[in-house]
Image (cartoon, rainbow, N blue to C red):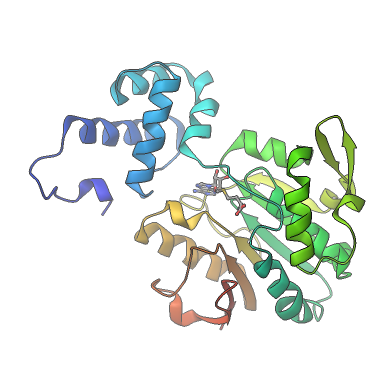
Length: 282
Ligand SMILES: C[S@@+](CC[C@H](N)C(=O)[O-])C[C@H]1O[C@@H](n2cnc3c(N)ncnc32)[C@H](O)[C@@H]1O
């Protein structure tokens, strides 16, 4: 049951609630993007910003604009999805990967790693650097997936703002980085252009955790800061998909505010490092 279809405690749904539900249905029917089981409070906030941006007074006006103007869809998606990311975000995650997961990964002759909800690519480049430093780069294929096409294009370019490199360098060092982050990019004006070798073994693809299914057997899935935007039911669907996509004893990494503890799959994984949110399929 979606949050919106639950009976309202204070009487019938407001006009805005009804419009929001109709809007979500319209997007699903017209473009096959399914936001029904996303966290409604955050979705409502972001759609309100979209209304301001598109100069629409209501969700109904926005619906009309998007239904009749497919050219606005990509822009709308930048409101409906959150692209905030960071290289070596939560360094403890990457440190635990190096120390506790990489030794297991070394035992495989070839590796598949899925970065689900890759956004603009910061997490992917961080993992690619880590795998290269650990001597696993050449035997790994990364699958970098998202539902936002413009974010995926940006991830494919591997160009980030130079302003953020100091912060990323600190993260990289705290994560146990073995070289200097600047070894991996060239600076040009205000941009850091990352070594294209880092995406040599990367398949970028559109894939939705809501509507799509298993596409390969992975040794590691890193899906960070995506499940927080889903309700409990959808989180269960996604974790089931991760379970089915992992090889026996494969690893799953989540974001610092995400956990498997309350999910239906909790018993099917063991906690490798609870603080780093790293799990292993049993
Ligand atoms: C906050 S970003 C996370 C970026 C990165 N993983 C990190 O932790 O820095 C969330 C990403 O999830 C993507 N996303 C949202 N719904 C999705 C879905 N159903 N399937 C796949 N990706 C989705 C969004 O487009 C967005 O790029």
